[in-house]
Amino acid sequence: YTWNQGITLLSSNQSLTVSPLIGTIYSLVGTNTLGCNYNGSYSVSVNPLPNLSVLSSTNSICIGSSVSFTASGATSYSVNSLVSPPSAIVTPSTNTSYIVSGNNANGCVKTLTLDVTVNSLTLTVSSNTAICRGKSVILSANSTGNYSYNWNLGSVNVPFGVTSPLSPTQTSTYSLTAVDNNNGCSLTNTVMVTVNANPTVMIASSSPTVCK
Image (cartoon, rainbow, N blue to C red; front, side):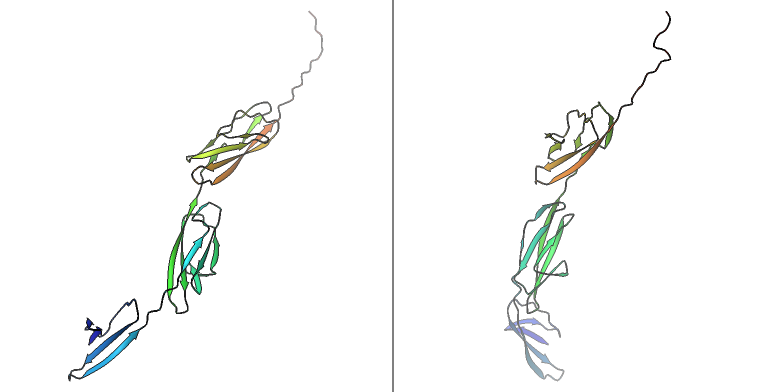
């Protein structure tokens, strides 16, 4: 066997694997043991890939948020091997890569990868606590990120990680919102301070007067 592309010898094997970029004609000469030849040709047409593009609303989100993306340039689409409409909304909980594939009428497929970064916050606040009425408590927050803090203390907002001593007169819930200064993501945690009533003490005597 002799496979040729134009005047270029490609192979002397019985089979030939090719990956043409454009339509190409391959010629074959087969010779038997008697020296007789067979001349043939095989034409390979190359269909274009879909002109696939993917437009996303963002590539970086806060945890719990969603990202929408729209694919165009193909006749059918899939995301991570699952059939999908051209537009989709996803809510990943961790950094995720979405492989978007588009098919055209010729059955050709093109894939693009959409990487979504998920930003999360780590925030530890004071545990729920209890105090006696008239006593005070200091609430605090701890984190390892570049955060700004804002305690909501009812009618007062305190922009610090640690509060001044609080003396609530009744059981109260306070919230702390932390904002990541690097990406604007926020997280809110709450602390309940239970205010216990003080005991009522009564003093009684057998007689209000005594002998000297």
